[in-house]
Length: 596
Image (tube, rainbow, N blue to C red; front, side, top):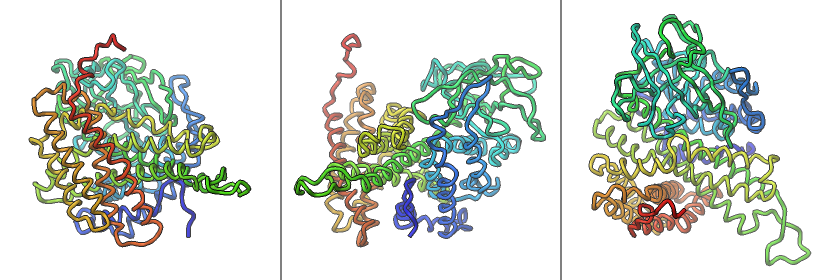
């Protein structure tokens, strides 16, 4: 038997993809008909190989030798470029890309599982192609054929990279306050001026070009988000023949130095500063994507995919942290059980109940989070293969409701798994000798970027559960109840607990919006997000428990133990959150800031 990886669990991925989600059944649809379980397993093995050989070896080195701002450009360790070249050469970069664009056209659920290997091995290096593929997907969906030819195809070939440029120094997450301007030019292009901040992969020398997707306001556009348009702003201009030419007026103004994710450049970019002025009018040359005023709609095409990617990345970091802690607990000897004789030998720390508690909690978080991320990806596949417009609409609506949870729950609780991994290691976990401290620092970004935890709470309670007159929440409840109704004898107690929590969620949601007071309803939106997230992940655990029903062996016993832990210890936390919401406490609204 092959040695178990400390990056991810191949066995758990096989269980989730094949024994639970039955991804091979997707090949019955024309979109995936050329694939089989054998091809899915082959690409997963390839992803594990690249993660192990190319991404993992420089994980700590890229953290200790982060990119530097030197003479207006970026310098970084060469191993990043080598790993990305290996990924490009493997063809895996094109896993989820349509065949008409030269891709493999894998189901998204399989591709997400593949990419989880790379994120777990080295999340900073994995960020560059993840952003590029998301940018390419947006342009493929909303760009013109000429834009696809000029920008998307080189991105898919790995020659160009891509970014998303939303945040600004003064605006942060408040997109309505974006001030970057776009002025129409006589040649049909636009000229952009302004500044963007916190731009992941915003500058580097890993590719021939960087294609920035920039939100900006056309000169006569209305205020607010409805006045935002989306523009392609390449670092270097590209002619109709695909030849990379002169430097566009996009300037790297500096790099932000972060607590984690240090291997991914995080840039401050200036547009139209005049440092590199192309021929013609002043400003950085940009090309409109789609229609004016629709920029945020198009950007959300990329952001929703990115949010599932962020959630999967958070799971991946939590999962590898858990595996490292498990390995350490099995090999580190210290102390003796309380009932042992004083002269007995020290035992592996996994023998101590409190260490087992931390490991079991971590297992419940990371395996529950992985199930959630893969389930969301499979929803995308179900939407895409369906020929029934009602089914497609329902899958899309359910996905809308789940997306803020998929992004935020793993970002909170798989980070907690990283915290526990440090604790299992004890003092060693707080040193750079072991990688678990870096995993925690890297994962700490995930509750912030692509929409903070608080923003996801506002999105879920303020928008998503109210979509289509509450149809989205109804779809979620129906899906969970269908699982509850399938519960077998061994899982009926857990099914009953989940049914009770689900009823509480429905009644609390109705109560929060009963008087139409939005300020009061949304004051504790984060509490609502956390409670709903725990109920959803309890559902994921009930699903896994049913998939493991009647199967013998340590792996399945481990699933049942983690499910029992989540229902006994974690699900009650959701009820406490709902209790807090039901009280209708207005302290946060009435609090005088002087009291701080």
